[in-house]
Length: 132
Image (cartoon, rainbow, N blue to C red):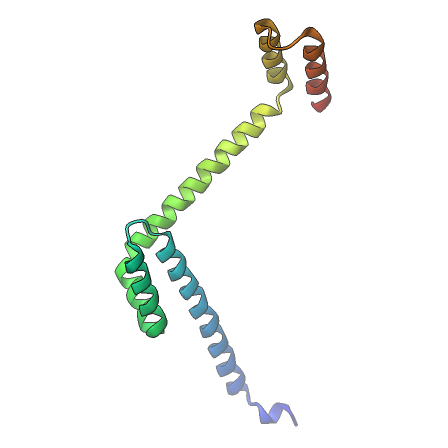
């Protein structure tokens, strides 16, 4: 009885409306993120775009996407390259810090320079070998 009161086409329409709503919010968040990430736009310009997108929702988002699609792509690419560079630097720093031979060599250099004592060098060497 319940299934007959809510036909299949109504279910499909409800799903279509729901997914359109989700996509709308995704686009809105994307546009807001891009507006706030821009460095070439003044505070007034950012406020104007946000007000335009809020007051004329669908039209404002589509206008922004059409007008700024190249800039959005460039900013996303720059952000991805910057994130990749940071990750590469982090991996290199962690990888170099975990090499026991390099830690011992650094400790030996400190010992030769007189920055640490022989007992401190032995402790550092034991820690480096224990971590391997």
